[in-house]
Amino acid sequence: MNYRALGRTGLEVSEIGLGAEWLERHNTEEVCEIIHYCADKGINILDCWMSNPEVRSNIGKAIKGNREHWIIQGHLGSTWQNGQYVKSRDLGIVRAAFQDLLDRFDTDYIDLGMIHFVDETKEFHALMDGEFYALALSLKEKGIIRHIGMSTHNPEVAKLAAESGKIEMILFSVNPAFDMLPASEDLNDYFKDEYYANAGGITPERAELYRICEQNGVGITVMKGYAGGRLLDAKTSPFGVALTPVQCIHYALTRPAVASVLTGFDSIGHVDAAVAYETASEEEKDYATVLAGAPAHAYSGQCTYCGHCAPCPAGIDIAMVNKLLDLALMHDEIPATVRAHYKSLSANGADCTACRGCERRCPFGVHVSERMKQAESIFA
Image (cartoon, rainbow, N blue to C red; front, side, top):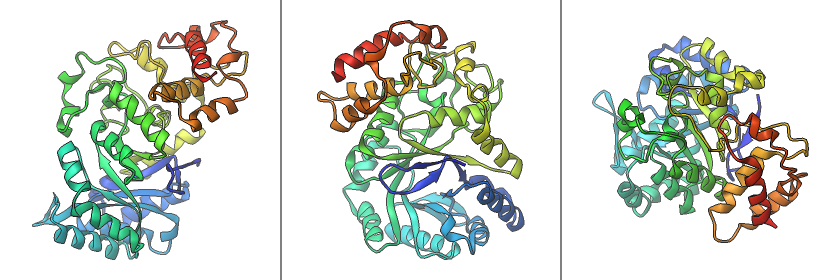
């Protein structure tokens, strides 16, 4: 298992993580089997947004005696009322639900205290400027949560969070289908087939979000990496072709700032399908060729940092140069850290010989040599 820095939190998280939602379907023995198997495979981050007392207790039993292995995302605002999940902003109810999580996990701290499910910009401002964020901050000051995060499906909210200076990491939905869609405050919009009819390539607000997060040191953990399973079946995929779990995971992990893809596991077989990423060949990881050859919605002209352009005879890491160029273009003045990263590369845009072998290999028709010239011009 490979591990990545989660922004500036100081935490090193496994590239593959456990999104525990599906564990609600299982009994204690099955939950323990899956979680123990995840730990054996090197998975060390677990998200529990669910408020169901039974699944919380089962997870608590599964991590008992091994708490320090796990980096836990626990949510402020996910509550259990009258036998069902309710998103709540009532501070009394929120405090009690979070204490219930601590009790059932038999722990006195949560690594990542997530402000739960904020998809409206108006609500974001109300929470951050009011008592809700104050609660999260007080829990951090007491050591009950170690870092403050936020979960959202809306790139506009995620951008506000990343630029706020108050949110240290974001749980965000990342997959090649959602990346084509405009921002929405309604999660259901991302599952409407008609939304994809005129889609084409990564929308600017999502591309900008990933770059802002990387620039600001705000790490991303990924939910809905398979788009709720739709991408794994050609009949439900908006591209008209199926992707594999490995391809979906690789797509998410090639986005700037992404540290871990949290997938739902119904069985140890599902765990194996995800962790296969760590030993997969480049051919097995290749989402780009699949998307470029799909009957609909290819990412024409856009660099997705997929790496198909390699190898470069001049030794340029073309995907990295493109990523740094995109970061630089976001600003009127190039941030010193971005400039330093570019200058530290063993080869960069100045070394491009315009052989265009990379362009012949690019599935999306990116004009690589022009971008290399642009990078050198900007960074020179």
